[in-house]
Length: 356
Ligand code: COI
Image (tube, rainbow, N blue to C red):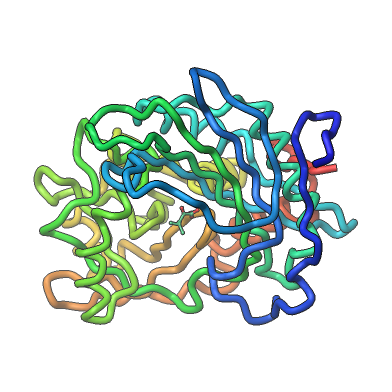
């Protein structure tokens, strides 16, 4: 082990898997870089951080997380800029959100400086894995889970924090067909909808699969109480252009505060577009698509970036949305975001964080 100045113990792979990896044809989330970051929480304190070869975990069958889902995660990306530098996009926002998730799930927040330092070191070590091309990036997955060997229902005393990386290209290959979900729910008031915990995703699998079985990519989640208001789309925030206003559901405790969502709103406002964060009813979207007042819809997330929606399924009917033209306002905002991330345009927001 090499002890670096930053006190991360680093053990490098003896031989990289990169030469035998096809970075041109990547399936999202199936390819993993050489190294991972690991830090345990034990006896009330964070232990020695380590970077080691990516590999399997050995866990007791009684590990708490496997039973009661005390686990949270984040998704962020690193990009190579025109000068060849590798940058993270808004990592502090992910770190802060993960700390909020930790509090809600009775877990110890990861110290911000160790998190950022470990992230930078890991990305530096595996920077050669960034694919070439317009949609290419490293997708970074930090996560924290309950590691006690115990099956009583209580917060764990021990935790493991890890980060691994996937080289990725686009998440969706085509405009989306989404189904308005009017029976099942992703989140409810007082629940965990606004944090990024594993259970939110597990609960969505069955209704999502039912939608996928009849030809939809994702569900368009509605509120749990009345199924009257739109909340999110699949694993993304959702935006509609309604009467020319870029409109997205307000953050009311059941919706994840997406960092891509926030970046889009910020850029749109600076560009002088009208924006609104408010409750959006199912009825106004259905009626609005029919009468043309809803002129576009898209999902926004780290993995998917901006994912155009072309069909909204409502009670067996497919409501068609116009294609987003290349020069549409939505695509122009997507391009502005990409230009900042890849260093083509100055970063006036302090969003881009170098790894050097
Ligand atoms: C992300 O966009 O980072 C997400 O969390 C979606 C993921 C579940 C693939």
